[in-house]
Length: 276
Image 1 (cartoon, rainbow, N blue to C red):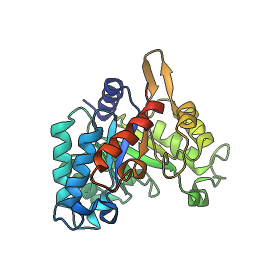
Image 2 (cartoon, rainbow, N blue to C red):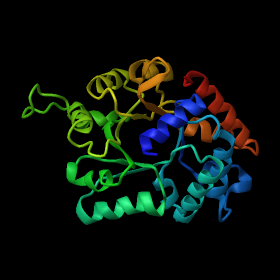
Image 3 (tube, one colour):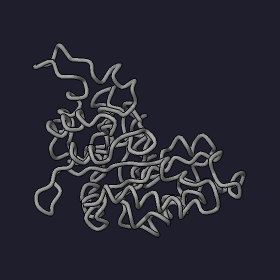
């Protein structure tokens, strides 16, 4: 299946729009896992096992692994996901944004080394930085569009005077992703839950694209407002998929030995709002 087919299947199978982001910070682990050589894998694997029946996707953030020289643990973790949750797509949160042969290498990293189904990208360098990923049949790519951080306004809300209608930059990115850049039909957009009005605007411009929506939970985004702004349904079918990510609120619901059960409880609470 293509990435979007996988995502649609997982969403309907699980009746869930929840994505668990895997951002492991060893200083926040339960004491019995701190300092263990494979502690990052063990922590994340327990989270995956505890939540795999509640989610439509998992999103490991590569920097949290690379910073601790744990790339091999990330490979092992994704292999574990394939074993225990084969129907759940894996989105590698890497935010790559380079061109030419370097972008080709990043695509190999995401799709061959780690075996991800989709990857997050920065589109700042234009289509050259997207092309190596959309050449991969069936693989997904989410372009940063309207991010959840306050500093996103510095660029994303600026108007483009040389483009008809003077759209804001994030609106222009959404149009490109909906149109000429979407050569393999698997592009999506990253839009932060902290800006529901902008989610609605992006959905208006790109009614069919999947939206990856971080910012629910610890960052303060409202799940109900996110659904109202971004989800489009036609009866029992979803015409505009959304993936609502929560990381810290689930991962660190407890720092005790019950961390996995606490993560499951937090994920169940999130899924109550994010069920379909």
